Length: 391
Image (cartoon, rainbow, N blue to C red):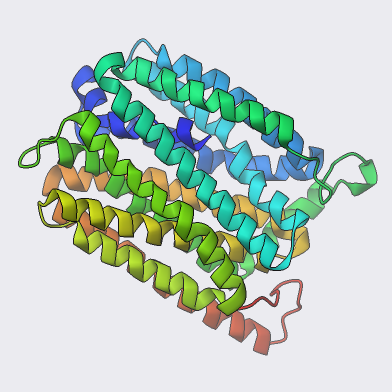
């Protein structure tokens, strides 16, 4: 799913050339899909409460693969944008439900590790989709590059469909187990009132915005003067995603054992450090900076998403997961487009400073969320409203 979502990112310079677009306009090929994911996750999270998470996830995967085939044959840029929007809506079913599915099936340290592994899988898919598309462009063109990424996704979809167990927590098999629409709306109210959860939504929005903005602009920077790398060589920068395979499960494990606040704040700090390293026009330093930046980001994402699963009341777990993913992909869309425009107008250093500011705001949000939780606890809030989780 993440290979399909992000395969266009290394192709943005080529799409800009093919359709005579500015960087900000070309970035809509990615932003159109991510904003559609942001729009779709909350309704699909609610739907999963009614018909079961497994059904929503399977339908999402199958429809996404079919739409991805259409993207490779889009006759023009507007048609590509329409198909990317539909693809984003289809993809939304998986992130809308996967976190809640794992939170219901597992508990304790195993839940934190599994959620970290889920984020690592996101990282692996995003990296593979970008690498396959970026490296294959030179001999297949952008259409062939998207087709090759889709072939990779088809294999993943087959494994997923065959291996996914039914959910014990929200099977949807018995009518008495299905929540009513009123209960779903009540859970949504809980999910938007808890300061601790609001802080995680802020982390998702701001950190993802900074992350996607950097990678949207990276292709333009690496293939332009003074670096002027070939597109296939520039695509190798996405190997930095491998850092997320290590940092995500590690962050989930550390958060369960040592507390979520220090792990999340440390991860955001590492992300800022990586961003600063990318400022000089030195290829090896840019590569190192993106490696640190990516590892820090995925660690922060694993810690924040795991916190949502642990902190959300049981009656609001699906809704909180959906809101987190909504903020995550809204950040990807808005931050990605704004960041591309900043890069096009002011350059890489300006983009890096703006992204760093977003990451600092995310850290401030975490501290404010903890303070709001403590005030709510002192005022006598019920455990269902303010769950007790390791800080």
